[in-house]
Length: 177
Image (cartoon, rainbow, N blue to C red; front, side):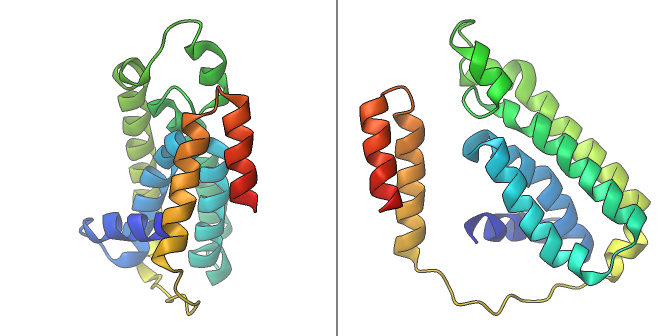
């Protein structure tokens, strides 16, 4: 829900109707979150959001396939903002001394630009169809702030201690508990 709220906030900054604005924000910002929460987590999160907001609403097959392709490509390249999220980068980052600044300077801004351009092209192609979609508010119960904070804290600790197995597993087991 936190990621959805961040994407919704970004969508409000886009001067378009909500169906288009959320689509653009989700397929640009969501894949870039893969640099912080890992690519599989970003893929899962975005798949759930897009399913509920677009796929369950009877969009055309052309838009559905274009969205899936865009999702796969953007998530694949979106994890390159950092040196610790994308598995191919993770395998070589420490050996080649790639840090976060190096990743953003050489790959990250290009990945962000590619996500933005490809999303803009697909959104332009399906502008009319996306423009007709309106948001259906989720009627689920609100998630307590303390629970979201706890999840973010454990996520940060797991990432911080990824190279210290004893602390990593201890943190992870506490989180599961």
